[in-house]
Image (cartoon, rainbow, N blue to C red):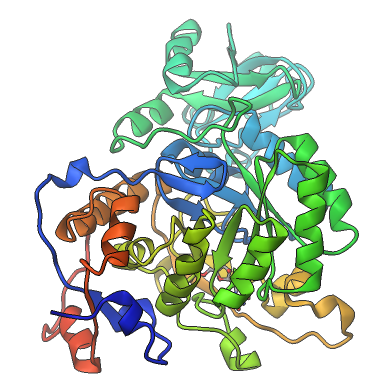
Length: 494
Ligand code: XMP
Protein backbone atom coordinates (compact mmCIF):
# COMPACT_ATOMS: atom_id res chain seq x y z
CA UNK A 1 0.00 0.00 0.00
CA UNK A 2 1.35 3.48 -0.82
CA UNK A 3 4.79 4.18 -2.28
CA UNK A 4 8.24 3.65 -0.80
CA UNK A 5 10.13 6.97 -0.66
CA UNK A 6 12.70 6.12 -3.33
CA UNK A 7 9.96 5.36 -5.86
CA UNK A 8 7.85 8.36 -4.98
CA UNK A 9 10.77 10.78 -5.15
CA UNK A 10 12.20 9.16 -8.30
CA UNK A 11 9.37 10.20 -10.56
CA UNK A 12 10.72 13.55 -11.75
CA UNK A 13 8.49 15.80 -9.63
CA UNK A 14 9.63 18.45 -7.17
CA UNK A 15 7.46 17.86 -4.09
CA UNK A 16 6.92 20.24 -1.21
CA UNK A 17 5.97 19.06 2.29
CA UNK A 18 2.29 19.72 1.56
CA UNK A 19 2.39 17.59 -1.59
CA UNK A 20 3.16 14.38 0.28
CA UNK A 21 1.55 12.48 3.15
CA UNK A 22 2.71 9.47 5.18
CA UNK A 23 0.46 6.47 5.62
CA UNK A 24 0.08 5.58 9.31
CA UNK A 25 1.94 2.51 10.60
CA UNK A 26 1.65 0.59 13.89
CA UNK A 27 1.71 2.03 17.45
CA UNK A 28 3.31 0.06 20.27
CA UNK A 29 4.61 2.83 22.54
CA UNK A 30 3.25 6.05 24.09
CA UNK A 31 4.01 9.41 22.42
CA UNK A 32 6.09 10.45 25.43
CA UNK A 33 8.46 7.55 24.71
CA UNK A 34 9.52 9.18 21.43
CA UNK A 35 13.11 10.40 21.66
CA UNK A 36 13.75 13.43 19.42
CA UNK A 37 17.43 13.81 20.33
CA UNK A 38 19.63 14.24 17.29
CA UNK A 39 22.86 15.52 15.73
CA UNK A 40 23.18 19.10 14.52
CA UNK A 41 26.49 18.22 12.90
CA UNK A 42 29.04 15.42 13.17
CA UNK A 43 30.11 16.35 16.71
CA UNK A 44 27.21 18.32 18.13
CA UNK A 45 24.27 16.67 19.80
CA UNK A 46 20.88 18.28 20.57
CA UNK A 47 17.98 17.00 22.65
CA UNK A 48 15.49 18.89 20.47
CA UNK A 49 15.81 19.01 16.64
CA UNK A 50 15.17 22.75 16.26
CA UNK A 51 17.54 25.36 14.86
CA UNK A 52 16.88 29.12 14.68
CA UNK A 53 17.86 30.53 11.30
CA UNK A 54 20.70 33.06 10.94
CA UNK A 55 18.46 35.95 9.95
CA UNK A 56 18.54 39.43 11.44
CA UNK A 57 14.83 39.28 12.32
CA UNK A 58 15.20 35.85 13.96
CA UNK A 59 18.44 35.10 15.80
CA UNK A 60 20.36 37.34 18.15
CA UNK A 61 21.18 36.69 21.84
CA UNK A 62 17.64 36.33 23.13
CA UNK A 63 16.62 33.70 20.54
CA UNK A 64 19.93 31.83 20.84
CA UNK A 65 19.73 31.67 24.66
CA UNK A 66 16.13 30.38 24.63
CA UNK A 67 16.76 27.86 21.85
CA UNK A 68 19.77 26.43 23.72
CA UNK A 69 17.75 26.33 26.95
CA UNK A 70 15.07 24.34 25.11
CA UNK A 71 17.62 21.81 23.85
CA UNK A 72 17.92 23.23 20.32
CA UNK A 73 20.32 25.87 19.03
CA UNK A 74 20.32 29.34 17.48
CA UNK A 75 22.67 30.42 14.70
CA UNK A 76 23.55 34.10 15.06
CA UNK A 77 23.20 36.06 11.80
CA UNK A 78 26.08 38.00 10.29
CA UNK A 79 24.33 41.04 8.88
CA UNK A 80 26.54 43.09 11.22
CA UNK A 81 30.22 43.73 11.92
CA UNK A 82 32.25 40.83 13.24
CA UNK A 83 32.65 42.72 16.55
CA UNK A 84 28.85 43.01 16.86
CA UNK A 85 28.35 39.35 16.04
CA UNK A 86 31.03 38.35 18.58
CA UNK A 87 29.32 40.50 21.25
CA UNK A 88 26.06 38.57 20.66
CA UNK A 89 27.93 35.26 21.02
CA UNK A 90 29.56 36.45 24.28
CA UNK A 91 26.20 37.56 25.55
CA UNK A 92 24.78 34.05 24.96
CA UNK A 93 27.81 32.48 26.62
CA UNK A 94 27.48 34.68 29.71
CA UNK A 95 24.02 33.34 30.65
CA UNK A 96 22.52 30.18 32.09
CA UNK A 97 18.91 31.31 32.61
CA UNK A 98 16.62 30.66 29.58
CA UNK A 99 15.90 34.30 28.68
CA UNK A 100 17.43 37.74 28.23
CA UNK A 101 16.04 40.67 30.24
CA UNK A 102 17.76 43.73 28.77
CA UNK A 103 17.51 45.83 31.96
CA UNK A 104 17.19 49.61 31.84
CA UNK A 105 20.24 50.91 33.76
CA UNK A 106 20.68 54.41 35.26
CA UNK A 107 22.91 56.17 37.77
CA UNK A 108 22.07 57.35 41.34
CA UNK A 109 21.95 61.02 40.32
CA UNK A 110 19.74 60.38 37.26
CA UNK A 111 16.05 61.26 37.24
CA UNK A 112 13.09 59.46 35.68
CA UNK A 113 10.85 62.18 34.31
CA UNK A 114 8.52 60.14 32.06
CA UNK A 115 7.18 56.59 32.19
CA UNK A 116 8.74 56.00 28.74
CA UNK A 117 12.09 55.57 30.45
CA UNK A 118 10.95 52.23 31.86
CA UNK A 119 10.24 50.93 28.35
CA UNK A 120 8.44 47.64 28.93
CA UNK A 121 10.52 46.85 32.04
CA UNK A 122 8.89 46.70 35.49
CA UNK A 123 11.82 48.54 37.06
CA UNK A 124 15.02 50.48 36.45
CA UNK A 125 18.30 49.14 37.79
CA UNK A 126 20.57 51.70 39.46
CA UNK A 127 24.31 51.06 39.35
CA UNK A 128 27.14 53.10 40.89
CA UNK A 129 28.06 54.85 37.64
CA UNK A 130 24.90 54.31 35.62
CA UNK A 131 26.52 51.79 33.30
CA UNK A 132 26.31 47.99 33.13
CA UNK A 133 30.02 47.92 33.98
CA UNK A 134 29.54 49.15 37.57
CA UNK A 135 28.11 47.74 40.78
CA UNK A 136 24.31 47.43 41.15
CA UNK A 137 23.10 49.53 44.12
CA UNK A 138 19.31 49.71 43.85
CA UNK A 139 16.11 49.46 41.84
CA UNK A 140 13.21 51.80 41.13
CA UNK A 141 9.93 49.98 40.48
CA UNK A 142 7.63 51.65 37.97
CA UNK A 143 4.64 51.08 40.29
CA UNK A 144 6.43 53.09 43.04
CA UNK A 145 7.50 55.78 40.59
CA UNK A 146 3.89 56.38 39.49
CA UNK A 147 2.93 57.07 43.12
CA UNK A 148 5.56 59.77 43.58
CA UNK A 149 4.94 63.50 43.36
CA UNK A 150 8.66 64.54 43.37
CA UNK A 151 9.62 62.83 40.11
CA UNK A 152 12.52 65.20 39.55
CA UNK A 153 14.28 63.84 42.65
CA UNK A 154 17.50 61.84 42.01
CA UNK A 155 16.99 58.09 41.99
CA UNK A 156 19.34 57.67 44.96
CA UNK A 157 16.78 59.48 47.14
CA UNK A 158 14.04 56.89 46.62
CA UNK A 159 15.50 53.73 45.07
CA UNK A 160 15.14 50.46 46.96
CA UNK A 161 18.67 49.35 47.95
CA UNK A 162 20.00 46.05 46.63
CA UNK A 163 21.88 43.83 49.04
CA UNK A 164 23.08 41.19 46.59
CA UNK A 165 23.63 40.14 43.02
CA UNK A 166 24.08 36.64 41.57
CA UNK A 167 26.72 35.30 39.17
CA UNK A 168 25.31 35.16 35.61
CA UNK A 169 26.49 31.53 35.40
CA UNK A 170 23.71 30.57 37.87
CA UNK A 171 20.76 28.62 36.50
CA UNK A 172 17.19 29.74 37.11
CA UNK A 173 16.76 27.86 40.42
CA UNK A 174 20.04 29.25 41.77
CA UNK A 175 18.99 32.75 40.72
CA UNK A 176 15.55 32.17 42.28
CA UNK A 177 17.25 31.24 45.55
CA UNK A 178 19.24 34.51 45.39
CA UNK A 179 16.03 36.57 45.13
CA UNK A 180 15.55 36.06 48.87
CA UNK A 181 18.74 38.01 49.61
CA UNK A 182 17.07 41.12 48.14
CA UNK A 183 13.70 40.70 49.83
CA UNK A 184 12.40 38.32 47.16
CA UNK A 185 11.50 40.74 44.37
CA UNK A 186 14.51 40.93 42.04
CA UNK A 187 18.20 40.18 41.67
CA UNK A 188 20.75 41.43 39.13
CA UNK A 189 23.06 38.84 37.61
CA UNK A 190 26.65 39.84 36.98
CA UNK A 191 29.25 38.28 34.70
CA UNK A 192 32.73 38.18 36.18
CA UNK A 193 34.24 37.54 32.75
CA UNK A 194 32.54 40.47 31.06
CA UNK A 195 32.76 42.55 34.25
CA UNK A 196 29.18 43.75 33.84
CA UNK A 197 25.55 43.39 34.76
CA UNK A 198 23.92 40.84 32.45
CA UNK A 199 20.28 40.55 33.58
CA UNK A 200 17.84 41.79 36.19
CA UNK A 201 15.66 38.81 37.12
CA UNK A 202 12.38 39.47 38.90
CA UNK A 203 10.14 37.19 40.93
CA UNK A 204 7.60 37.44 38.07
CA UNK A 205 10.23 36.14 35.59
CA UNK A 206 10.87 33.11 37.80
CA UNK A 207 7.15 32.38 38.14
CA UNK A 208 6.60 32.76 34.38
CA UNK A 209 9.35 30.25 33.56
CA UNK A 210 8.26 27.79 36.24
CA UNK A 211 4.74 27.76 34.76
CA UNK A 212 6.02 26.72 31.30
CA UNK A 213 5.86 23.16 30.00
CA UNK A 214 9.03 21.26 30.84
CA UNK A 215 11.87 22.22 28.51
CA UNK A 216 14.27 19.65 26.95
CA UNK A 217 17.78 18.97 28.21
CA UNK A 218 19.57 22.29 27.53
CA UNK A 219 22.25 22.34 24.85
CA UNK A 220 25.71 23.04 26.21
CA UNK A 221 28.96 23.32 24.30
CA UNK A 222 32.17 21.58 25.33
CA UNK A 223 32.87 24.81 27.27
CA UNK A 224 29.94 24.01 29.58
CA UNK A 225 28.06 27.13 28.39
CA UNK A 226 24.96 27.42 26.21
CA UNK A 227 25.61 26.07 22.73
CA UNK A 228 25.55 28.73 20.03
CA UNK A 229 26.37 28.81 16.33
CA UNK A 230 27.27 31.63 13.98
CA UNK A 231 26.79 32.23 10.28
CA UNK A 232 29.54 33.60 8.08
CA UNK A 233 30.37 34.05 4.41
CA UNK A 234 33.09 32.76 2.13
CA UNK A 235 34.96 35.97 1.30
CA UNK A 236 38.54 36.68 2.32
CA UNK A 237 37.42 39.02 5.14
CA UNK A 238 35.29 36.22 6.59
CA UNK A 239 38.50 34.58 7.80
CA UNK A 240 38.94 37.51 10.17
CA UNK A 241 35.28 37.25 11.20
CA UNK A 242 35.84 33.56 11.91
CA UNK A 243 38.68 34.41 14.28
CA UNK A 244 36.38 36.79 16.20
CA UNK A 245 33.66 34.16 16.36
CA UNK A 246 35.99 31.46 17.64
CA UNK A 247 37.45 33.79 20.27
CA UNK A 248 33.94 34.71 21.41
CA UNK A 249 33.14 31.00 21.86
CA UNK A 250 31.00 30.00 18.84
CA UNK A 251 30.59 26.21 18.90
CA UNK A 252 29.78 25.74 15.22
CA UNK A 253 29.82 27.89 12.08
CA UNK A 254 27.49 27.78 9.11
CA UNK A 255 28.70 28.96 5.73
CA UNK A 256 25.70 30.92 4.55
CA UNK A 257 24.96 30.75 0.85
CA UNK A 258 21.84 30.16 -1.21
CA UNK A 259 23.87 27.95 -3.60
CA UNK A 260 26.61 26.35 -1.54
CA UNK A 261 28.23 24.18 -4.20
CA UNK A 262 30.91 26.68 -5.15
CA UNK A 263 34.67 26.85 -5.22
CA UNK A 264 34.44 29.64 -2.60
CA UNK A 265 32.61 27.46 -0.13
CA UNK A 266 34.76 24.40 -0.74
CA UNK A 267 37.88 26.45 -0.08
CA UNK A 268 36.38 27.99 3.06
CA UNK A 269 35.34 24.59 4.43
CA UNK A 270 38.93 23.40 3.97
CA UNK A 271 40.27 26.59 5.58
CA UNK A 272 37.99 26.24 8.63
CA UNK A 273 38.85 22.56 9.10
CA UNK A 274 42.60 23.13 8.76
CA UNK A 275 42.67 26.25 10.99
CA UNK A 276 40.24 25.08 13.68
CA UNK A 277 40.10 21.25 13.53
CA UNK A 278 37.79 21.09 16.58
CA UNK A 279 35.19 23.46 15.16
CA UNK A 280 32.27 21.92 13.25
CA UNK A 281 31.50 23.65 9.95
CA UNK A 282 28.15 23.28 8.23
CA UNK A 283 27.96 23.85 4.49
CA UNK A 284 25.12 24.70 2.13
CA UNK A 285 22.63 25.38 1.00
CA UNK A 286 22.26 22.39 -1.25
CA UNK A 287 19.30 20.55 -2.76
CA UNK A 288 20.93 17.83 -4.91
CA UNK A 289 23.07 14.78 -4.30
CA UNK A 290 25.79 16.22 -6.56
CA UNK A 291 26.05 19.46 -4.57
CA UNK A 292 26.01 17.51 -1.30
CA UNK A 293 28.79 15.16 -2.38
CA UNK A 294 31.11 18.04 -3.21
CA UNK A 295 30.68 19.67 0.20
CA UNK A 296 30.98 16.36 2.06
CA UNK A 297 34.21 15.64 0.21
CA UNK A 298 35.53 19.08 1.18
CA UNK A 299 34.99 18.15 4.85
CA UNK A 300 31.60 19.64 5.82
CA UNK A 301 30.36 18.37 9.22
CA UNK A 302 26.74 19.07 8.33
CA UNK A 303 24.63 20.17 5.37
CA UNK A 304 21.90 22.77 5.19
CA UNK A 305 19.22 21.88 2.66
CA UNK A 306 16.77 24.15 0.84
CA UNK A 307 16.71 26.54 -2.03
CA UNK A 308 13.78 28.87 -2.53
CA UNK A 309 11.53 27.03 -0.06
CA UNK A 310 11.64 29.74 2.62
CA UNK A 311 8.52 31.79 3.30
CA UNK A 312 10.28 35.04 2.32
CA UNK A 313 12.29 33.61 -0.60
CA UNK A 314 11.94 34.58 -4.21
CA UNK A 315 15.04 32.70 -5.44
CA UNK A 316 13.04 30.21 -7.53
CA UNK A 317 11.11 33.03 -9.21
CA UNK A 318 14.14 35.25 -9.77
CA UNK A 319 16.74 32.64 -10.73
CA UNK A 320 14.65 29.66 -11.90
CA UNK A 321 16.72 27.41 -9.65
CA UNK A 322 15.76 25.40 -6.55
CA UNK A 323 13.77 22.34 -5.57
CA UNK A 324 10.60 21.38 -3.72
CA UNK A 325 11.68 20.99 -0.09
CA UNK A 326 10.39 17.44 0.53
CA UNK A 327 12.29 16.16 -2.54
CA UNK A 328 15.42 18.16 -1.63
CA UNK A 329 15.50 16.85 1.95
CA UNK A 330 14.95 13.25 0.87
CA UNK A 331 17.54 13.32 -1.94
CA UNK A 332 20.30 15.04 0.03
CA UNK A 333 19.68 12.99 3.19
CA UNK A 334 19.91 9.73 1.25
CA UNK A 335 23.46 10.68 0.22
CA UNK A 336 24.52 12.36 3.46
CA UNK A 337 23.43 9.44 5.65
CA UNK A 338 26.02 7.20 3.93
CA UNK A 339 28.76 9.58 5.06
CA UNK A 340 27.36 10.16 8.55
CA UNK A 341 26.76 13.84 7.80
CA UNK A 342 23.61 15.24 9.46
CA UNK A 343 21.19 17.31 7.37
CA UNK A 344 19.39 20.48 8.43
CA UNK A 345 16.07 20.91 6.59
CA UNK A 346 16.07 24.68 6.13
CA UNK A 347 12.95 26.70 5.28
CA UNK A 348 9.34 26.01 4.47
CA UNK A 349 8.31 24.93 7.98
CA UNK A 350 4.95 26.36 8.90
CA UNK A 351 3.43 23.66 11.11
CA UNK A 352 4.40 20.63 13.22
CA UNK A 353 3.42 18.29 10.37
CA UNK A 354 6.12 19.87 8.19
CA UNK A 355 8.66 19.14 10.96
CA UNK A 356 7.57 15.48 11.10
CA UNK A 357 7.89 15.22 7.31
CA UNK A 358 11.36 16.85 7.25
CA UNK A 359 12.70 14.62 10.04
CA UNK A 360 11.23 11.37 8.73
CA UNK A 361 12.42 12.10 5.17
CA UNK A 362 15.98 12.07 6.51
CA UNK A 363 16.80 15.42 8.12
CA UNK A 364 18.34 15.46 11.61
CA UNK A 365 17.10 18.95 12.45
CA UNK A 366 14.83 21.64 11.04
CA UNK A 367 15.92 25.25 10.65
CA UNK A 368 13.15 27.79 11.00
CA UNK A 369 12.73 31.44 10.15
CA UNK A 370 9.09 32.48 9.97
CA UNK A 371 8.04 29.85 12.52
CA UNK A 372 10.18 31.59 15.17
CA UNK A 373 9.88 35.18 13.90
CA UNK A 374 7.19 37.18 15.69
CA UNK A 375 8.09 35.51 19.00
CA UNK A 376 9.10 37.43 22.12
CA UNK A 377 12.70 36.30 21.51
CA UNK A 378 12.96 37.53 17.89
CA UNK A 379 14.82 40.85 17.43
CA UNK A 380 12.73 43.95 16.78
CA UNK A 381 9.69 45.54 18.36
CA UNK A 382 6.03 44.68 18.04
CA UNK A 383 3.81 47.02 16.06
CA UNK A 384 0.13 46.99 15.18
CA UNK A 385 -1.02 46.45 11.57
CA UNK A 386 -4.72 46.23 10.76
CA UNK A 387 -5.40 45.67 14.44
CA UNK A 388 -2.94 42.75 14.70
CA UNK A 389 0.21 42.69 16.79
CA UNK A 390 3.10 41.81 14.46
CA UNK A 391 6.89 41.84 14.22
CA UNK A 392 8.91 42.46 11.11
CA UNK A 393 10.33 39.40 9.33
CA UNK A 394 12.50 39.84 6.25
CA UNK A 395 14.49 37.72 3.83
CA UNK A 396 18.25 38.14 4.06
CA UNK A 397 18.18 38.57 0.28
CA UNK A 398 15.58 41.35 0.45
CA UNK A 399 16.81 44.74 -0.73
CA UNK A 400 16.32 46.11 2.78
CA UNK A 401 18.55 43.46 4.40
CA UNK A 402 21.15 43.58 1.62
CA UNK A 403 21.45 47.33 2.03
CA UNK A 404 22.60 46.52 5.58
CA UNK A 405 25.24 44.13 4.22
CA UNK A 406 23.88 40.62 3.67
CA UNK A 407 24.43 40.68 -0.09
CA UNK A 408 27.35 38.22 0.09
CA UNK A 409 24.92 35.35 0.61
CA UNK A 410 23.49 36.08 -2.80
CA UNK A 411 26.91 36.80 -4.35
CA UNK A 412 25.76 40.37 -4.96
CA UNK A 413 29.10 41.80 -3.81
CA UNK A 414 30.70 41.37 -7.19
CA UNK A 415 27.96 43.24 -8.96
CA UNK A 416 26.97 46.87 -8.98
CA UNK A 417 23.30 46.02 -9.49
CA UNK A 418 21.57 44.48 -6.49
CA UNK A 419 18.81 41.98 -7.30
CA UNK A 420 16.49 40.98 -4.45
CA UNK A 421 15.90 37.28 -3.79
CA UNK A 422 13.62 37.86 -0.83
CA UNK A 423 10.91 40.09 0.58
CA UNK A 424 10.19 42.13 3.72
CA UNK A 425 7.06 41.15 5.62
CA UNK A 426 5.63 40.77 9.10
CA UNK A 427 4.40 37.84 11.16
CA UNK A 428 1.84 37.72 13.97
CA UNK A 429 2.85 37.75 17.62
CA UNK A 430 3.38 34.15 18.75
CA UNK A 431 4.42 34.66 22.37
CA UNK A 432 7.55 32.98 23.71
CA UNK A 433 9.41 30.15 22.00
CA UNK A 434 9.85 28.74 25.52
CA UNK A 435 6.14 27.96 25.41
CA UNK A 436 5.31 27.10 21.80
CA UNK A 437 8.35 24.96 20.98
CA UNK A 438 7.60 22.39 23.75
CA UNK A 439 4.00 22.15 22.48
CA UNK A 440 5.23 21.83 18.89
CA UNK A 441 7.63 19.04 19.91
CA UNK A 442 4.79 17.19 21.63
CA UNK A 443 2.86 17.34 18.34
CA UNK A 444 5.94 16.03 16.48
CA UNK A 445 6.18 13.13 18.95
CA UNK A 446 2.55 12.25 18.20
CA UNK A 447 3.35 12.21 14.47
CA UNK A 448 6.29 9.86 15.11
CA UNK A 449 4.04 7.65 17.23
CA UNK A 450 1.48 7.35 14.38
CA UNK A 451 4.34 6.16 12.18
CA UNK A 452 5.62 3.67 14.77
CA UNK A 453 8.97 5.49 14.90
CA UNK A 454 10.32 5.94 18.42
CA UNK A 455 13.34 8.06 17.41
CA UNK A 456 14.92 9.81 14.43
CA UNK A 457 17.24 6.88 13.56
CA UNK A 458 14.26 4.52 13.82
CA UNK A 459 12.21 6.74 11.44
CA UNK A 460 15.10 6.91 8.99
CA UNK A 461 15.55 3.14 8.96
CA UNK A 462 11.78 2.49 8.61
CA UNK A 463 11.79 4.82 5.58
CA UNK A 464 14.91 3.26 4.06
CA UNK A 465 13.55 -0.24 4.53
CA UNK A 466 10.31 0.75 2.78
CA UNK A 467 8.20 0.03 5.86
CA UNK A 468 6.99 3.63 5.87
CA UNK A 469 4.99 4.49 2.77
CA UNK A 470 3.90 7.78 1.26
CA UNK A 471 1.51 9.14 -1.29
CA UNK A 472 1.21 12.37 -3.21
CA UNK A 473 -1.83 14.41 -2.20
CA UNK A 474 -4.00 15.76 -5.00
CA UNK A 475 -5.15 19.38 -4.72
CA UNK A 476 -8.49 18.17 -3.36
CA UNK A 477 -6.74 15.89 -0.84
CA UNK A 478 -4.74 18.87 0.43
CA UNK A 479 -7.95 20.86 0.86
CA UNK A 480 -9.53 17.91 2.65
CA UNK A 481 -6.46 17.58 4.91
CA UNK A 482 -6.89 21.16 6.12
CA UNK A 483 -9.86 22.68 7.95
CA UNK A 484 -12.66 23.10 5.42
CA UNK A 485 -16.37 23.65 5.03
CA UNK A 486 -16.77 25.88 8.10
CA UNK A 487 -18.14 29.42 8.06
CA UNK A 488 -15.59 30.43 10.67
CA UNK A 489 -13.35 28.81 13.25
CA UNK A 490 -10.65 29.64 15.73
CA UNK A 491 -7.29 27.94 15.15
CA UNK A 492 -5.83 27.32 18.57
CA UNK A 493 -3.42 24.41 18.95
CA UNK A 494 -2.64 24.71 22.69
P1 XMP B 1 11.25 30.04 6.52
O1 XMP B 1 10.30 29.36 5.59
O2 XMP B 1 11.50 29.26 7.76
O3 XMP B 1 12.63 30.11 5.73
O4 XMP B 1 10.82 31.43 6.80
C1 XMP B 1 13.81 30.55 6.31
C2 XMP B 1 14.98 30.27 5.38
O5 XMP B 1 14.86 31.00 4.17
C3 XMP B 1 16.16 31.27 3.63
N1 XMP B 1 16.23 32.69 3.34
C4 XMP B 1 16.07 33.20 2.12
N2 XMP B 1 15.94 32.61 0.92
N3 XMP B 1 15.80 34.75 -0.11
C5 XMP B 1 15.81 33.38 -0.22
O6 XMP B 1 15.69 32.87 -1.33
C6 XMP B 1 15.95 35.40 1.06
O7 XMP B 1 15.90 36.63 1.12
C7 XMP B 1 16.10 34.60 2.23
N4 XMP B 1 16.29 34.90 3.53
C8 XMP B 1 16.37 33.71 4.18
C9 XMP B 1 17.17 30.85 4.67
O8 XMP B 1 17.69 29.60 4.27
C10 XMP B 1 16.31 30.74 5.93
O9 XMP B 1 16.84 29.86 6.90
